[in-house]
Length: 509
Ligand SMILES: *[C@@H]1O[C@H](CO)[C@@H](O)[C@H](O)[C@H]1NC(C)=O
Ligand SMILES: *[C@@H]1O[C@H](CO)[C@@H](O)[C@H](O)[C@H]1NC(C)=O
Ligand SMILES: *[C@@H]1O[C@H](CO)[C@@H](O)[C@H](O)[C@H]1NC(C)=O
Ligand SMILES: [Ca+2]
Image (tube, rainbow, N blue to C red; front, side, top):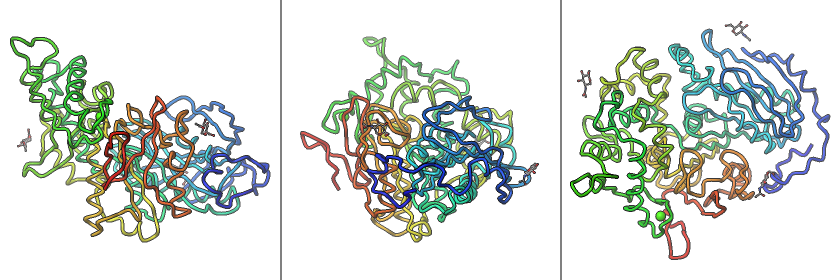
């Protein structure tokens, strides 16, 4: 088997030339493997070719298997009161690389799409349930379950996963990678901070870092428009009016970047003035009342603490109406922050969010359950071991303000006393992309799988770009994204800016 590191392009265009029988043990034999605190429940060879398999737990019924793999399900007891369920998908044609994948939201679901993507790219791919099943609220009352969620599940999948990989293929992996977005992005940064040896390369999209403030900001967005009593609140803004707001934001800010294309390249330049939408005697439709205008003013300002210190960056103007509305502006408390505050921080299932305020957020930050904050700028151990970190963030992110990724980058630069982090950490900002994917922008670049439109080159696939950086020292200058209509755009690495020259966008210092 050719596990010597092939050039990246052949990584995609690989033609299998060896039979699966070259492995030292058959897939099913992994069931007898004895590893610390671990039981391997099943090990089954699946011929791939897009078969659907049933998956355990409460997350979803089925998953797609693209590559021919050995599918291993295992359970690791992390303490006497907590355990992690995980799966390793070990491709017949393995290129020697290990891939750990993350999770989403507060969900405890193995991300089957991600491990399918990884194994179809010839990684041995491992994902876990993050230490709990589904959006399992009661289990979060157990502190060790929170620890799994905050830092341990990804570490366990790396440590145990690598041992399973070595047992199956008869040799250790060459390089190890991590892939995740949102909560998965936070898990990636947490791995770099806490277990710098686990991964050589980490791809952490739209990271939910500064978690306690993020959860608090989500609650505040709801409160601005009247939650938890939105039905009777004068501040509530119904869906139809959000479309009016979105159109006005584009009117004020789309052309700032030189092109009217429904994309605000740099939302930080957009100083949206909602007051022009105020209803008057002449204007009685498609307009907003004073309390609604006041709510918008707050939404598009950063969240400040009691001493006017920045707690969380502002909601990006120019996000997709539907996505933002579904998450934050329907008039209720976002379920994720509801779980986090009631079950984990306050341990009060009856907490009334009418009493939520800056003190509640300060308490969460003080308790910092499981050390989940993930807002430490000291990546020196990860840098020292040669680790490479890539983050990316959509500038029309409906869920996590993109300003947090700039802020984290700057925090690392400041903490490590480096003006330029290019040698080990690159942040790509993606105009017009929503949360982790989607949106009007050039939002396809291999962060979630092969997309029909995306270019199959190292620069068009951010995971392969990371591999190229780790293994060949070829650091990505830009990432080429493709939009749903096929148009492409090079995404710039922070702090470079994307500047229109009259014909095209260029990255400029
Ligand atoms: C893990 O814990 C469960 C129950 O807490 C126990 O039944 C099982 O034997 C343990 N597994 C291992 C491998 O220690
Ligand atoms: C937050 O609410 C609590 C209880 O309703 C109150 O005691 C406290 O003073 C409030 N704090 C702030 C900063 O408003
Ligand atoms: C890129 O490669 C994948 C996997 O081989 C394939 O499914 C996809 O169609 C390719 N896309 C293009 C544009 O060639
Ligand atoms: Ca524009």
